[in-house]
Image (cartoon, rainbow, N blue to C red):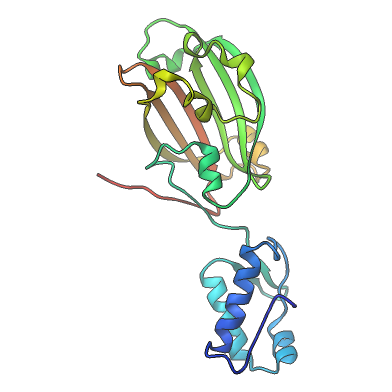
Length: 245
């Protein structure tokens, strides 16, 4: 309770002081997701204030989705709401995570050279199969899963990437170092789907959970398609910004 500060002679209302103290503790990670807050009765007794004051502060925190209230159990800190602008910017996934004030890390599950799956040939405007670098990764923020991706890269373009790309290095950040990628552009579209068992296991969520699938086709100025990526994002607790033109 030491993170809650109240000054009764302050110009700020008491409920606002409680609200801002708890909000600041959450944002600075002194309070973590799942932490239980003092009850309304405990705060009333500790600060000698009325219950409506505490309730107004808690209601504002609930409204802004910092905490939730479980009847008979108490009030608890929620997981932070992430906001991604992946549909309107070309920021890499690690940059997207950093923009949410989280430390990005990468866990790689698969890296192999295979024949391009037949169903993906049209994604590359190809009529005959060719070799692709196939990668599966989880992008984490503060060690919590954020994006699970499956990417296909034309091997002729990325043939040096096997030895040079580190497991914890962003693919997009790596490609930015290549001279021919100065004019990289991407087309993206999002679909709400029910996750299969593999994706649920990667995110450690319940079977048949729902979320978003984001398909990205990237190309350079001459029209050459250099990447096809499928990214999966959990639906709960994630906000995605979409601009229509």
